[in-house]
Amino acid sequence: MEPSSLPKRSTVRRQMKTNKKRKEKSFFYILTRVFLGVFILLIAAGSWLYFAPSAQNLRYLIADTFITTQHRDMAKYIIGEDELKTRVTEYNVRFEQMGDEVDTHNIQPVVQEKEKPLVEIENITGSGYTGYVMIVNDPTKVRLGIPNKVGIGEKVSDMVKRTGAIAGVNGGGFADPNGKGNGFKPIGVVISQGQLYYNGSGGKKSTQIVGLDRLGKMIAGNYTLKELTELGVQEAVTFQPRLIVNGKGLIKNAGEGWGFAPRTAMGQRADGTILFVVIDGRQVGSVGANLYDVQQILLKHDAVIAANLDGGSSTVLVKDNEIVNNPSSQYGERYLPTAFLVFEHPEQVDLPNIWEGLESKDIDAGKKRK
Image 1 (cartoon, rainbow, N blue to C red):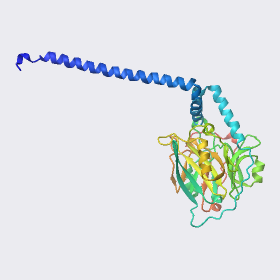
Image 2: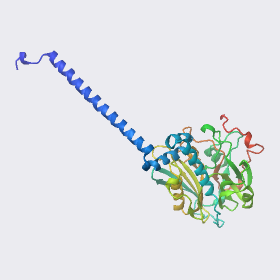
Image 3: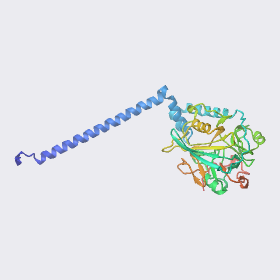
Image 4: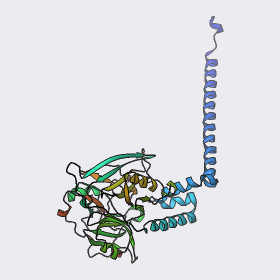
């Protein structure tokens, strides 16, 4: 080709600039269309979620999941403030009613088989969650652990190490103002070694407890303090709801399961074996479970009675001084007022009453930890 027939450099540069502009224009055009498509999709999905009758179950599921967190008020943006109040009230009424049926299960005093370990841990998985079942083959080996310092709760791992326990899980709830509670002020009652260590029931006639009597029989449901004394309850905390009574589940379906969350629950088989279910949640790989999921796990493991324990960011399982699960709290393992601990020789354990002489109304639940 003759030099005179080659395009001039200026012409080549103009063509390159033109092509570049076209590519940029094409890219921004595509990007704009993508953003517009996503925006329209979000508007359509939001409209369906908020207004379509077919989305009602999903709305309640999202709201229930918020209700189980420290950000309960967020649920009002899903179902409205009035509906939020109504739903929480309905849950509380239903949970109270679930504790009313008289429990008739009995166990025989357990003689632990020598070849069988006292504690066994089984991995479990389900739709959207992973977790563990801790099997305690002798229920008389379980005691209620409590903190050893006034004004602050204690991590379950520290309770296990301090007391020489084999294993432990979190127990009852506690006052937790703004999600920054110090873990020292329990909700309801605490009974340890057959003694009433703490009474924050506020004059209520009965309270819904989860615990064990002197023979290792699990006691769960609504009881007065007098009834608990007559039953010989040795270790107990206040929490709800009861999930299983007389071998039947009380939650009818997942829609009544109170959303997805980390969970802890306690159950017992007819032979006395204690079951602790611990479910991780609010994390990649394990969103959490609803109470119906937990109930079904316990029924599958032959529980004849079972009840919910404090869950959420308090959920933790410790075995041999190691944390087995993945607690969801952004601050790590939480400071708590109670934990169910397992001992080879529980009769040798000394757990003095840290709340003795303290009035519930005078305890600062939100005092900063030192």
